[in-house]
Length: 303
Ligand code: PSU
Ligand code: MN
Figure (tube, rainbow, N blue to C red):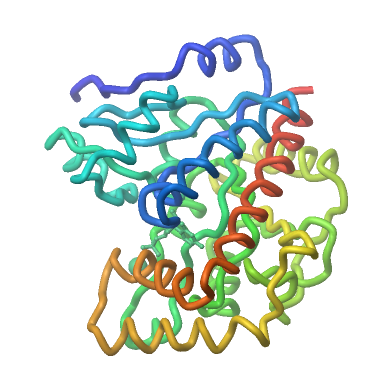
């Protein structure tokens, strides 16, 4: 085995050593999920939101072939400035590293790296899942596979209806991944607070969620947890208003023959464009909201 080129930022390393709260963050949302400059602004705002809750942020990415756990300001600038930056899920890491590439890490690869670094709580916007039409395309995100085999709690705002939400929830059930909705009886659909799918479990406070995460980890099931946190009401876009746009984007992707790992970035970019910024505003608000909850959960976990 070769030694992994893995750099843990000194602040993150010190926090882990001292048993302080640390929250991992992914970087595909920065490199492939949001337009510039909102991507960089949001990345910095999310880190600030985590610090404001007393936790230490650890944004994870690949920089010129090295795994970074915690990015300096210069690292973040270098990541977004790299024209050859790729999107790396867990299976893409090795080749990207051997080639010395920079990459945004998806939920799947970020979970993998967070677990290796000893970080148990991770905040993002939305996870990948079972795509609409998966019965024909077999397009199921590696994020679900990773949730089934890596012991990290992922705080998200549910899943976008670019995905098949009922099938995504079925898949998580099959893989023994607890799905906990924060303060709602309905599983959230990213832009919308409700998806029409009932919450399998509801917990109302960060302290209760932290206790559930701690208990799940001590059970040793080997799986992660999905914590779904509905978008704040003022920023929510009702399903009735966004569903047509999403359907349009999904149809365009199919018509243009978009496949594999290009599908999700294509859909996100189309939806951002079609809603002229409204979806982006909701996206930013929900990521910040998830970062705050994740920091509180991480705080509860180290108590
Ligand atoms: N969904 C979003 N925003 C995102 C992503 C998903 O609403 O930025 C990104 C995440 O990094 C997620 C990845 O892990 O897309 C999933 O890609 P795929 O569907 O190709 O597995
Ligand atoms: Mn896919």
